[in-house]
Image 1 (cartoon, rainbow, N blue to C red):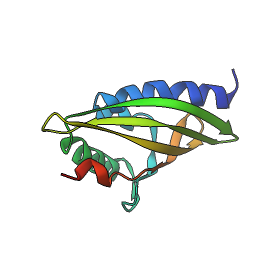
Image 2 (image 1 turned 120 degrees about the vertical axis):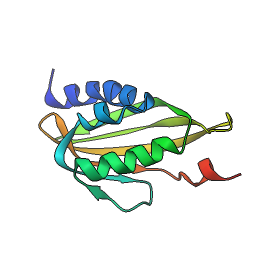
Image 3 (image 1 turned 135 degrees about the horizontal axis):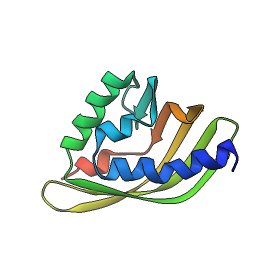
Image 4 (image 1 turned 30 degrees about the vertical axis):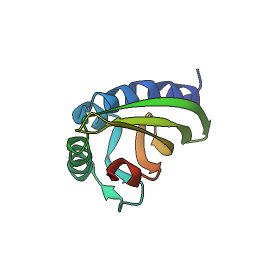
Length: 124
């Protein structure tokens, strides 16, 4: 298995941690100084800042589940696309498309960018 293949294979474990809203496990996929940007929010740097941002987001929803459609890798970059279904605290759901770009340092993510419009999640 190539490095690119093993990085793509790790995405299933990464999204399992995210869908479980398990911030600690999620952070285990990142380098200590990783950068993380979700949608149009400013990027945050380092595990402490990422922990705070991710916990804040997780507390705003009741649940989530990702469906990956495709992943491609080149050198130290993996790009995946799919859809995520969010469950709001009022038990309603919404499914939104996303594209994620991961830059790796070895087997850990050093730069994690999520491209999506999260606005509809919070629309009444």
